[in-house]
Image (tube, rainbow, N blue to C red; front, side, top):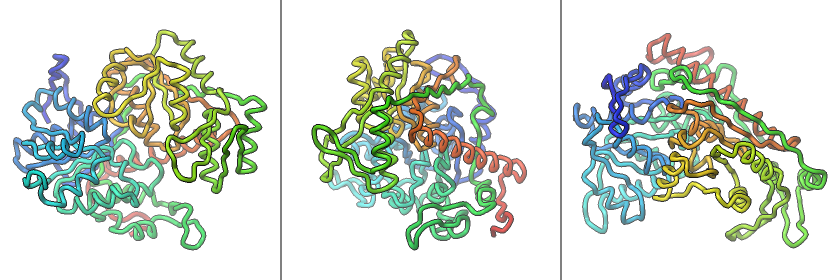
Amino acid sequence: MISRLYDKRKNIWYDTDEHQIRAYEHLCANRRAALFLGMSLSKTVVVLSYLYDMHYREAAVTRTLVVAPGKVARITWPDELETWQHLEGTRYSVVTGTAGQRIKALNADADIFLVSVDNISWLIDVLSGGKDAAGGRKMPEFDCIVIDELDLFKSRSSKRFKKLRKFVRPIDYRIGMTGTPRPNGLTDLWAEIMLLDDGERLGDTWGKFADKYFTARGNGMIVYEYIPKPGAAEAIARKLCDIALTMQTRDHLKLPNLITDDIELELDPFDREIYDRLEKEYALDFFDAGGVTVKTSADLTNKLLQISGGAIYEDCPDNRAPRVWHEVNTVKIDALRDLLDKHPDENFIAVYQFRHEADRIKVAFPFARELRKGENAVRDFRDWNDKKIRLLLIHPASAGHGLNLQFGGRRMVWFSVTWNLGHYLQTVARLLRRGRLEEVYVHRLIVEGTRDVRVCRRLASKEDNQTFLMNEIKDLRNKYGGTKERTYGGFA
């Protein structure tokens, strides 16, 4: 990796950071590599620098497929390619748009192809056909794959994981990138690492991995939870210390302070009665029509979180759209209004979980703009960073990865907090990243005595466990120099 980077757009030279050089060298030393790097540690430019050299200097790779979240594939990767001078001349194609437009992009004269996670199943189906039926041209074959936000493939039962697992087998060079490798627990790691090493480190089947490192808690064939055996985290870290490079953001970058402000709210007696009735009776009727009936504890938690947010969907057995929701309180809408009034000269990002939350926010605040999809996302992204949007609404599943939103404002409001640690950390990192000088405020609207409190506690526990894994791998690499160490305690 070159020692100095030139930003063509800003006309500024940057000295390459030591952590960027380490990450680049890790890729050079491992054809199968995981970069477990914290947010804002320049994973994208490091990987692009590596790909440039592999394509145009070493001639070791002919075609690379980059799989990334939709907005990241459309905005972030092309933006990086057009920013840095040393990447000039890279031939790339963004596989997006209609099916016809995607086929045309696949047939482009390019070396790097960018595709969204949502389109990966479609792309694999097209490539498995061998030729484009419309043009008769042979579809490109790939000898390198980069999976940006590897944790999006953590579900071993998902269609996209199953298809990608077969697709990557003949691909020699593989890179997985994420700052949140185990957002929900150690079980997330099996599918992620399988895509990189075909099961060499953690076992080639889920059953082998689960039996070795976990105790199953359940009822017969139904498993409720996989509980790590004593020493499992350390043993798994040792298995991964050669393929995975881990770095925590604050160990390498000077970032502004992150101030988390939990705003505790209370329901009035009538609204509390609605919440308590559903929690106790698993049912709720509305005055006009319709109602809610809960059958499982997971569904109950979901419905109670909706009530904390101020509205709830009624039962819809035939999945009609749009779904009907009923407003039950305005506690969080009022709290959001207070924040906007308290800071009249600042712009805010509001993070929502349920569709009705975004709908209600837009009614209460007509100037709010929701981050859109497709080409409109580029305009919204730029308008926010140009400070033209007072209140930007985002959902963490679609906007929580890869977007640089640090220039439009410094305040984020979690209207409802997510259970998903990866979504939470990645979304906060849209503001807390390189280039931000002022402190960042994260306001979390928490209704006392509700599931909101439980979600926040669970997030804190998950973050502690993930930090332990990242540090364990780092310590093992420092001790053994990234070589394979196959045993730990009672684990073979």
